[in-house]
Image 1 (cartoon, rainbow, N blue to C red):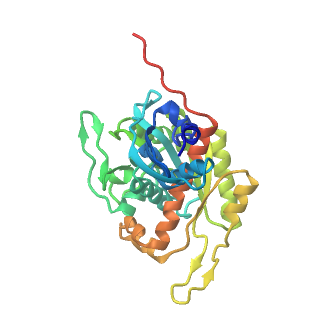
Image 2: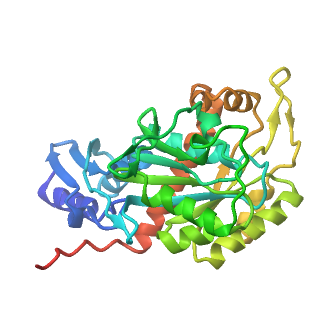
Length: 357
């Protein structure tokens, strides 16, 4: 490779945008090393754990940029961890890069399963992820993950229960399974505040919040307490469910929480005996609504007996051992990370200025 080609390749690489911040690799120092040869280039590039779901896509993007200089060049890309610690959000003390609310317009659409699976998919991809079950009236996360035990308090901080290294908090860990939670708005606000402010979450890339169904007080409390990155709305395909999803979208927009995308759950059923497909609740309705509302469509999840059985036995993590189901779940995490990367590219994050003393 001649010197002009090398210079052109470097220009292409330096102008690539970091998926997390939207800033160029030259500005962030994430182009760690380059080694040119007569037939190609070896690269070492840093990516943060926040961008972990996009690792393979980012490698392909790097190779395509080099190919614009010369398609015959051989490109070897090594990705290394690049540390960029999260900063505290507002005055609440939560140190997290992306706070994602997962909501729905009504119950029974699989919102908690989607929220739990999304958190697990992000964690398995390499992201530092926490899961907050804010569905105070119907907490499902402990059941879905098989979690039990009273969270201890250390130094006036509630210690979340960990699932495979992922911190999890739920009112379901604080009350007996048969006990009903009967709270008015102020008590609800207080509980949600404690779960965000007084839980020792540690530094996170993502905090996934399983919201209560409907358009109640929790979204308003969270919007006032911490700058949410955005919301994911879960819905089933049929029209009667879409009517409620529209209200959920409107609710998030009203409290100025960006809607990052929609998920269609229970989209279709493939009979394990015959392989025949049945659209029990219809199919494609959520995607059509997303297109109509100019909102991203993050993907769908099928009606799957295994997903139900594993949730009932507290073994939701085993969904990732089912290749078909795992593909759907990993795609949700990847698509969410890609939406965030597009937002960052459109509005690059400015570097923090040093505090003057």
